[in-house]
Image 1 (cartoon, rainbow, N blue to C red):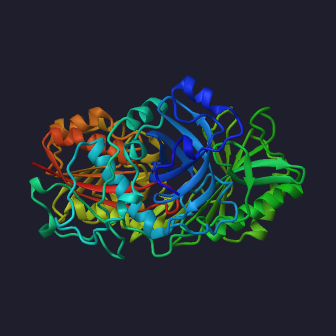
Image 2 (image 1 turned 90 degrees about the vertical axis):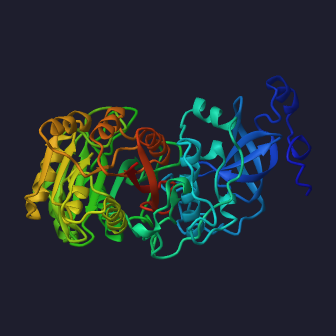
Length: 545
């Protein structure tokens, strides 16, 4: 088929769509069928194609493919279409191994081979650095190995890699720079290790290393959060169907630890036998909302958290007895009470029904106590990679003072403390600081101090007390750093800043602020913490210019 036949000529529709399209002044209308060449992929995994310059997002389509798609929805500058047929397949397309992949919303990239996922994620980071941060990235021939000319086909355009989640942001991106970026890297095991000799001069730009992936990118999650519903056959539990709150019953999840799957299966079966009711979002009635399971990969210890719509659990002793008999690895059974009509999983009250308050796990040599509400990275193997890179970029010799903003339960702080003279951690969540202090004591680390509060309030107070940081590490939530924290960093002027990010768009925004304030972004290493999803973590080194 002639490649130019991507607009009205290739449209097949039984409805008189041309008139409605003309009214809207668009080349397509709802229910039209079109042939699209997929030129990129959005930050949430949708294929990007164009009809006469008009952008359509197609779930399940991969860059480099030609597809037949049905237009589902149109807006002024972009629309959505459903994949009907693969006219030309990408060589990176594979059969998803998960039997419910097409229904479940938990993964987005199982239809793309893993090497291509890693290349695409690296390119997504580059796109954000360049287009949002207006930062210069090192190109081929500038000290980066493994340049791949086809990585541009895996990257999204400005409308695909942009940070904007809402319509106004997306529309702005659709009108932006649509050029393909032809630089990318093939993943190599062990790639990304650097030495100071590889740091580039300021005019060379930022090195973006190959994405550090997993040798076995399956069964990596240590925490399962399963919403519970009901059918005629009794309790079901699994994941929400893509784009909805309809629960898809699940017996096996290929990114969960196998033992988590087994615990969820047994808990559902016990609940059915005991006649436990499931929470109904619409009516607000029913008891069991979620089953949360945690496992320590290094210790094998397991915790079950039953999230309930009310305090009383019928036949609770029978339930606990059955869990203890059938699941000997479980050392803690907790209840979290959430009576609010909300999508938030946890309520404010948690109590231990049986066993211990915590389970334990290790990241490297550091031991952590994990409670029902503790935030703990869900991929322990890649967490060690992520934190190892953080320590490397911090450049610690044992004589430095380090501040860890957004320290959580102290995971990064304690990892850094193995190599630093003094570490200060700050976190706004009181319970997290209590956990952090307990974890420091658990590891005999007396040279670590934690304080409750907002980083932008606490760190200036530390400075007034004479505390000067050689290195500041930030690991903010997806929204990025608070602007006042960035200003605080610029005022404290540490020699190094290490930025750990779970969102490339807010990372790029914040790096621009730090660059304008006198720092130079030297190097970025993407770390694939969540294989087969569109999420990517990054560790970034900045030096004071």
